[in-house]
Length: 271
View 1 (tube, rainbow, N blue to C red):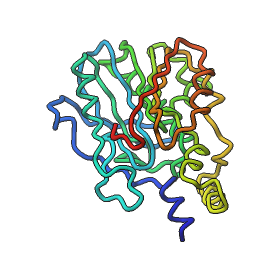
View 2 (cartoon, rainbow, N blue to C red):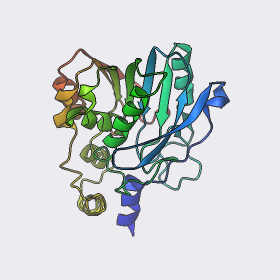
View 3 (cartoon, rainbow, N blue to C red):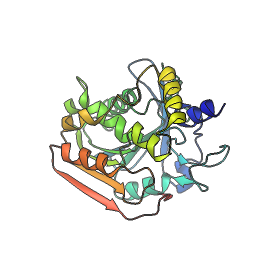
View 4 (spheres, one colour):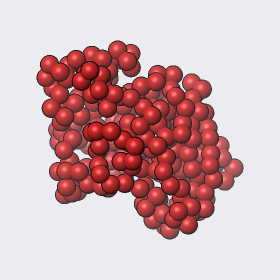
């Protein structure tokens, strides 16, 4: 029972409701849907700022949606006790002249169930990043806009995978920069939970059976070198999930103009 419970906490979707709207912050927006190349329907908000530049935000995994994080309706373990509303920083971006696309990954929020019904930490979710880019690049208002990527945790992993594949993000000239916040590897997360032990091996075995992949072996690190736009890597130096060596490896592998930003926040910041 404990193995199933822990596995659900790590790879089970459907735990990330959408809450609030951009309208709560006085932002003009429209509900949008678009389709990934494997047929999965994705839902999001296109929040209207200027048309010269647009940010595409990809959120963190399992307990998050386009809105951010809410503890409402979540059983133990709750990552945070208070909401993390993404619309606060989206409002700031709009004030600076950006439009913003925020969307739910497959198996999250209001998006459809994936061809794999479990969260894979990037190998499947990278298809959603590609779909978001295609949606913006083919939108009448934004087909000539500069695109920036704001990619958070699993979003950063998924974006990195999407740079590394054939005909991926590296082929899109509209993408001008990326901010990658805490690109987290599955083994680092498991270790930070204290599950690098017998119980943890059983949890990972179940996760592998559910996702049909070896989550300890698949890695976005090989795709970092394919990133071809200036990249800012952001990491909380006190984050409880931090493996500093992994972050430094990611930064060192970047072959583009880059900046490393270490933030001295608390171990569980409501960022």
